[in-house]
Length: 631
View (cartoon, rainbow, N blue to C red):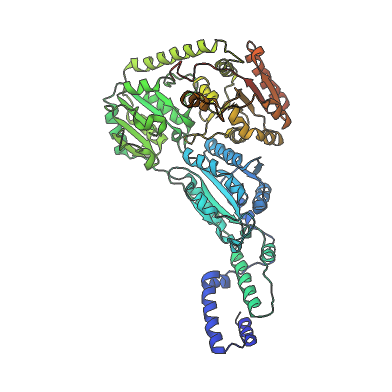
């Protein structure tokens, strides 16, 4: 380097004194910019054909990652190729948002991190909604995003935008990798953080120059071994050191095994305080949220704990199905009335947001035990409408297990559970009566859902994606087992159906996965039938087709007197599914007495052919969702 600069100064007529000053400045800057000391110690293997994607795959494999979801792009191709080679199943979807939803479903159902890799720019911006949904649903997801070469950022490179600013508000951890040697430690940290404390998404930006091989990066950057003139010599020195710094130490042995995950645990004092309150209660109630399903407590251990406690529960989010479909401790209807009458409430991962009317539905006089890993969620709106008697920032499942052991022997009013079960039965009978009524047009949606409930097998997994029709389904369909219900969560995102079903079927290949779709939400991800077909993943789906965004339509017409932007057509979604390689069925009024048989026929045909099925069901309107029956 000194010889290059000296020759250049001589050509330019620069004095040796001034030249020495410039040399000193350049070298000082070079030490800081290019880690020249590190470069001197860690040689660059300029002949190696290896690339950074191989290290990504090695780390993921060491973390027991089985699937990676993607939509192909040149920025990330080395990751996909290396993942395939090492045995990770690479599943490419028809839209990046579905890739994230699929990773989300895998994370929820397996207790691991869901992994998705997408290309730079629009590939990443297409994931924003799903990443925000995962943040609010507290799903651990690793998002790997391609990016322009670091040296070209801000210079007009293809698909170059400020991606870090987009994802910092959405992710627990955001880092842009600048050298190959940093890939493994950054990924290990990201995977640890995604699962620690309150789980959530993390984002790793992977510039293209840390993913491809040395010779290709050097060629693309434009670095040359020689050059004429001072400016060219300095530019080539700069570019060569830039590339060398990326690859210095790249292939030295590095640790890839998982780091320990941090999970907050309850203290004995917190459990004791909760037991003291419980000992005075006669009508306690548990509101269970999705956090109760998180590791380290297994579902069967949590079920034993709840049965030991003997406290009736309302299950929400991913906790639906936790107690099976017939538990006497699970209450499904009239939650508001039960809350008014309870003399102690345990918020086991449930949050006082809009779903609990910001805490206003909680009784003022009953003590409340709140348990949540997230400090903000633990006491949300407690400054206005409610106050916890005990606030436990800890793992929900662990708390309930320890509480059940410490409270063993406590008993509650025997009429309490019976009262809740009686109300449930009355509500169910009223719903069944409404389901038997003939609607003005098409099929009664309640009748369709009751028929589906009868044919669902014990291993069914339900994916809920929609508004009005799915809102009815939530009251009628009963998840059979733990981790057998998938809905968006608190963000209320439409379009999760195709991606969630894809992830669920890969995570549980022996289960029968059903998407319950509204016709509006179906339009978001029905293209994933192509993905189901290509990967030979038979998925069942039922579309409630009323040719409208009915959940919005109902209130908009009542309040504003117009149906603007709320009407759809009775689209042939079954034909669309056929076009993507699936099977399509149409249910209409003529099939009113034959729905159950046709649903079973569709299931059998899917099993026989290995194809996915879409059952397009033309439905009419009932009073179930507009106040005729209190829900």
